[in-house]
Amino acid sequence: HIFARRYCGAIMGMCLHALITTFIPLVLRAFIEWFTDDSKPLWVGCLLGGILVVAGFVANAVLLNHAILTLFVIGMDLRSVVNAVVYRKATRLSQKARSQTSTGQILTIMSSDSERLPQAILGLGTLCVAPFSVLIGFGLLAWVMGWVAL
Image: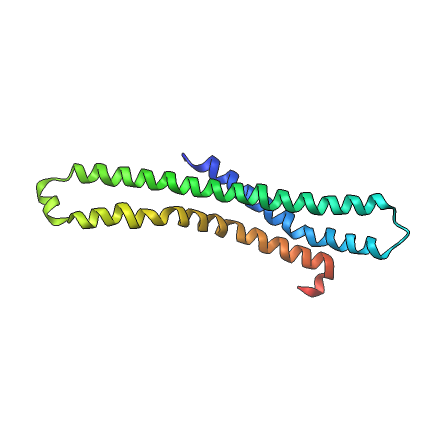
C-alpha cells in the first residue's frame, strides 16, 4: 500500500519502454524504404530519423532508467523497513529468546538477507512486464507476417 503508487508507475514505465522498443524496428523499416524510394520527399526521411532518435532516447534513457531507479529506491526503502523491524524485534526479545538466537543470526538477517530485497523488487518488476512484452511481440509478429507466423 505504501509503495504501490511508485511501483505501479515504474511498471507502467517499463511497459511503455517495451512498447516503444518493439515499434522502433517498424519505423526503421519505413526509414530504409524511404532511402530506396526517390519519390518520397525529404521531410519524410527527416521525420522518420527524428522519430528513431527521440523514441530510442525516450525509451531507454528516460523510461527504462527511471523505472529501474524507482524500483531500486523502493527496494532500498523496503530494506530499511525490514532492518528497522528486525532491530526493533531484537531489542524487545526476552532474555530466554536472546539465549536461543545468536547475534550472528540477527546480523545475517539485517545485512545479507535484507540486501537481496532491492534486487528482488527489480526482478519482480521485470517479471510483471514480461507477459506484456511477450503479447506485444506476438501481436507485432502477427501484424507484420500475418497470423500464419504464430
